[in-house]
Structures are given as C-alpha cells and as structure tokens.
Image (cartoon, rainbow, N blue to C red):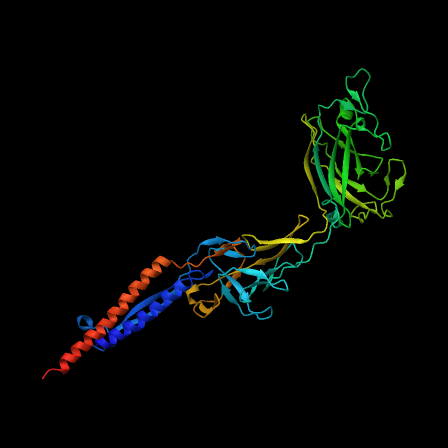
Length: 458
C-alpha cells in the first residue's frame, strides 16, 4: 500500500511545486493573482468496518484556487494605465465586433491606430460611450474609442442659443461705496465731479470710477477683450446707488451709447430686477462717432442670433452677483462659455472610470466610461492566459457597472496593480513542497526495502 500513498504524494507535490513556480514566475506580471494548492486525503470505500481500522491510501489535489486579494498600486508614466482598487475586472473583447467577454485585472492600456483603448495583447477595453462629449449612454457596452481630433471653437453666448437665461458672460463686481466721485454732484458737495462719459477722442480716466475686463470669443474662436466702465450717477439718494455700465470691445467699439445700469439698495445689494443684459453687437460706435456694423467687418466674426435677443448679433452679460459695499473695488465673479479651438493634449481616467480628454484651450471632453465586471464566485473563473479569465457556470454571469458603484472598486489613473505574489512566502512554500516530495519518495524507498527483505526470506 505504501507504494500507492507515496506515489500519490509525488504526483500531488509535483503539481504543488508547479503552482509555486508559476506564482514566482509571475511575480512581476501586472494584475496576476497568486494560486494556492488545496489537498484532500483519500480513503478506500468500504461497506462495513472503518473507524480505527481505516488506513488512508494517499493524497489528492482537491483544487488550485487563485487568491483575488488586492495587489500593490504602482504609479506609471502612462495616463492610460489604470489600476483597480477593490473588487472587479476590466471587461475586454478580442475585436470591436466580437461580443465575447474576457476579464482581466491588468490595466496597461494604450491607443491603437483607430483610437481604440487596447492592451498589449490586442484586447479592446469596453465601457459606456459618450455620444455628445458630455453624457454617457448606459444602454450598451461597447469598445471605448478616443477621438484624437481637435475641438472646434465656441462663441461666447453659445449656451444662450437654446436658453436665454444661461450662458454668455457672467461678471460680478463690487463697486466701492466710499468712492466720492460722480457724474452729477450737487452744489457745495465735497465730492469730485466726473466728466460725462464720451467714447471719442476726449475719452480719459476722469470719465469713470472703475473698469473691468473680460475675454470673449467670436464664432471663429478669436479672442476679444470686453471692457466695462462703471460711472456713478450722483452723490446722494438713489443717484448715488445707481451706476452706468458702458461696454467697449477691443478698446475700439462702444457696444451702445445707452449704458446698462446697476441699481443698489442702501445695504449694497442689487434692487430686485433683471441684471442680465443683452449685448447687441450688430451696430457699435467708434471713437470718431461713426457706426461700425460688425456683421460686415471682415476682421471680426461676430455672434449669431441668441434665444430671446432682439439683435442679429448678440449675447448676454449677467451682472446679477454685483454689490456696492464699503470695500475696495473688486471683480468677484467672472466666467463665460466661449473658447478658441484646441488640440488634444492628454487623456486621463478618473476614479469613477470617466475617460476625459484635455485640450490646449483648457476644455475637457468626456470620451466614455470604463465599466467593471463582478462575479458571485471569482474562483470559478477559468484562466485562459494573457492575463485573461472567462466566465464559467461556477463563476456565474458577470454584473457590469460603473466603478465605485455597489461593491465595485475605484480606479486609479496612471498606475497599475502589481502581482499579489509574496515572494518570501512562495520561497518558503517551495522548500516545504520539496521536503514533502522527498518524504514521499523516501516512503516508496522504504517500502521497497521491506519488500526486498520479504523476498529474501528463506
């Protein structure tokens, strides 16, 4: 009998050494999960007896199970390298049209010549597509693609095309209530009198109290400077809380000779009303007093019609956040929805799997979202090589979803998950399995000696 027991030990511990050797060989394989051998004893079946009289007939290999514990996260220089921190697998396809899913923890990705996110073995990373660069289509899982083309310019006021209550230029300023200069000053007042505002050759700094500048963009993406000049109306009452706002483009074109107005309460907040001003650019005034029709000026490609506007070339300037407090002049809020053209400068993947393209004009475009797959029994997955697993009946079907949702892990861009092989432990395991193998061989040798002794009896 000892021959059979010893032989089973040789077979099992030989396979155990194979497993340990494989773990060691993949100590530097990104996303690799170490395996462990599980042993089970073997007894002969009997209809009666057993108990204290039973003698085992050896050992068998019960299972080889991979350990899906977290590996260390190592930072790389590739923004498209992605590490999973927690549960889940990347879902891959072998071609854009083959829907068969392969699963991996190896997040070393790059772009191919068609803009697909692929790994080093040619697998296609899948996820949710972004049809408009702003939202995600969760209805279908598709191979993720990244458009490397540039981003077209957007004029200031573009958002107002569909909703006149948003978009354009948002500008919030504080106008210093302590400034004792006004265009209309009562006799005997100690305030200084401003020269009436005139956009002509006489224009000078004594015509306004304060000015601010903001960059705006025309249809071609060319930047222009919009300067607001703020003029206080008077030295008392409502006049002291009323400010005229004259707007000039590129220090050449006065948008309108009739200024917009900001009117404040005694506490420095705006009187209830609308301070979202329509900036009609279709007919501006030059310093020589002539009108310039921007629709025919070949040097300017100005704004198209916006929702709710009366001018053919207009956008909105929202000054609803302005104040008149007793503190220094300041620009508190400035934002606008236009930008010039730009080229793709880099890509990144955030913790929730959103693939983002960053452009030279400061804009960001949503390219898609990586999905993660979870299994009820990861140990039921079948390894196919190349860092891939496929689903089996034992693993159950995958549930797909966004990183960070449910029990799925989050993603780290510009990093990879190292193999979870513990080299020290594996080297110790190798010694143990080697000793067990030697001991099994020794039991066979001892049984052989016993048999030889019995044969030699005379």
